[in-house]
Image 1 (cartoon, rainbow over the protein chains, first blue to last red):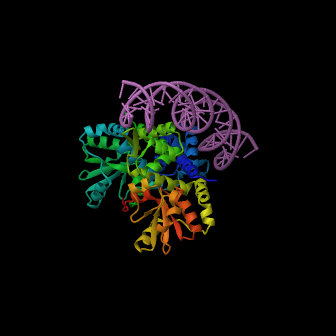
Image 2: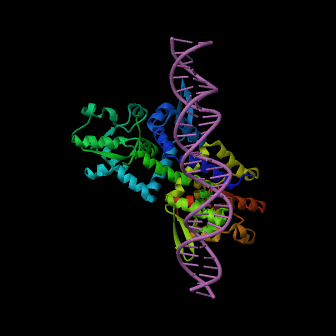
Image 3: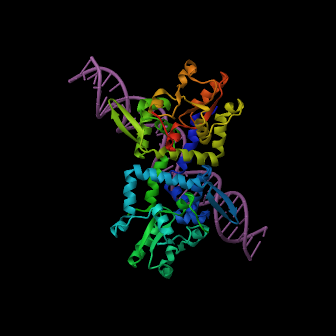
Length: 219
Length: 219
DNA sequence: CAATCATTCTATCAATTCATTGAATGATAG
DNA sequence: CTATCATTCAATGAATTGATAGAATGATTG
């Protein structure tokens, strides 16, 4: 006999799979492109074995699937909605947990000190794009950019920022984005570019959120 | 120095709070009305002490707050969006976990055997209501009904179903709803009413989902 | 088909979570 | 102001989770 509690227990199992910071990091990465275990382990700062275990855990919860490509196992999210789920979790946490607010404030503290420019909201970005006043800068690695990006975005991976400045306009405001709200790449880009005199702000969200909202993407 | 990982760890803490079947049951109950510890413990089949501990856990995660009313502590959800969050978790789990599908199928197996009538979707219900062809039956306890219900719904708590049959129309289809998709109250109501010859189906969701979707509610 | 590479599996230990028990706290009623 | 009621706190033991190391598997390369 199945009870309601059995269902809730199974549901809880899925929630528990989200209940680990390393696994959330893996999911954020997987929200960009499907990726091999080794690459995932590197970006999440885990040993291969450990990353593999976490990925198994996510797999048992139905959040990711894997297929083999040559010697590598390629993992990907099973469902677009996982991005929305994480996004909602983030919103709820930021609204109701003081600790969360404190950490977010801290992470972006130097930026604020630096001129108190708020991150650009989705609506604001949409307005800026359609008026043609804003240039979009994608600072993720090329591979992630290739798999999908915001329309008309210019890709300059963080590692090559200083080499490719000629691609950036001087006359328009630049909005930089990366993997998501907590991704530090765009944050670093804004810092460096400000020092070089560019008018630049950070997009509040990232590519996966944009896509999950049903907005147009290019690849 | 705050890193992105600190943020993800804190986020994970919130997800972990959702990672227990009993706590999900508590949240489902709290999605109806704010409630005392004792009542919560009873509906979730927990000892008072254990329920209290789980509630502390939810509180630390910022998902519920408590205030004192006389001798009792009254808990409530901190945020409307928690209902949406749980609903999305459920959708992702049902789509991607075979185990989940199996359990849902099992829980409603006898209903299906009984005539293979699918649960009523939100859109279908909206259509039925506006055409006036459907009568709405709320089978939750009176207290929950009073705190908020679907417009024009008739409240017959499960315990009194047989006593209050005169309130139900014979000439229209009845749609019964309760606390949510996994709540068994409406399911039981449908079973009993079918045996009595009523035309009755179950609403796929419950009051909290309806409200969270921004649809009108009465109280 | 032997060597190599990418990943998974197994075992182990430390840390965390959960349920239970009984004592402690805080508010109300007499 | 003491007795009672509702809840929380603290301590315990069992079960689960997470990290590590090393062996095992499965696919490719020469």
